[in-house]
Amino acid sequence: MKRFLILSALALSGICGMAAQEKYEYNEFYYQRSTLFEMLPVDSDDIVFLGDSQTNGCEWHEMLGNPNVKNRGISSDVIQGFADRVQPIIDGRPAKLFILGGVNDISHDLTPDSIATAMRNLIVKVRRSTPATKVYLQSLLPIDNSFCRYKAMTGKESVIVETNKLLKRVAEETGATWIDIYSRMVDPATGNMRKGLTNDGLHLLGAGYAVWRDAVLPYVEE
Image (cartoon, rainbow, N blue to C red):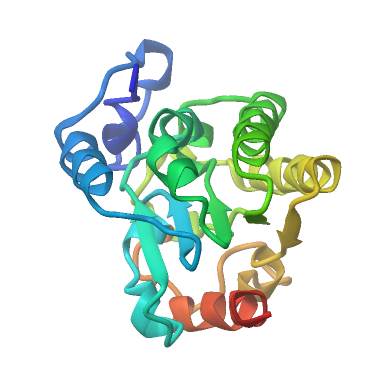
C-alpha cells in the first residue's frame, strides 16, 4: 500500500476546486477497510466485488443469494487504491472478480485515458497472477447533478460516457467480460441516472442495487 487520495471523500462531499491540490495518502477509512480485508480469507470458490462506495454500499452476498460473494468495496477509493490493495484477493485466486471504479478518479479531473490506463494495468496484474480468475469489468454508473450534492462531478456526465467507451475497450483488450450497467440506469431523455435509483445523484437506493443485481446475476451464476 503506497498511496491514496485522501481528498476523494472531500471531492465527493460538495467541496469544489480541490482537484488541483490533491495529495496521495491513505485516509482512515481506507486503512480500516483494507486492513480488515487483509485478515479475511479469499479462496478459489469466491466471487469478489472490488470497488468504491457504490460497491461498498451493498450487501452483495444477500443481494445475489450466494454466500461465496465477498464485498471488497471501500468508499472514496480510486483505481490506484484498488491496485494497492488487490494482492490479498490475488493470493486467494478467486473464481471471479467483478470490478467497478473510476468515478472518484473523475472527481479529481483524471482524464478518461489515464483512468483506462490505470484499469488496464490493474486487470493485467490480476490476470498475470491468477489467470484462472474470470474478470468482469463493469461500466461506470450515470450520475444526476440535479441534486447539487457533488460539485466535483458537475459537468462530468460526458466524461463518464467517454470513460466507459475506453473501459469497454480495456475489457476487450485484456480478455475481461464487459458489463454495461450504465445503459440500464440512465434516462435517455436527460442523460441522468433514472429517478428512483438514487437520492443524492451518485449513490444508490435499494432500487438502484436491484438494477445492478439484475445486470450481474447471469455472470455470477454462469
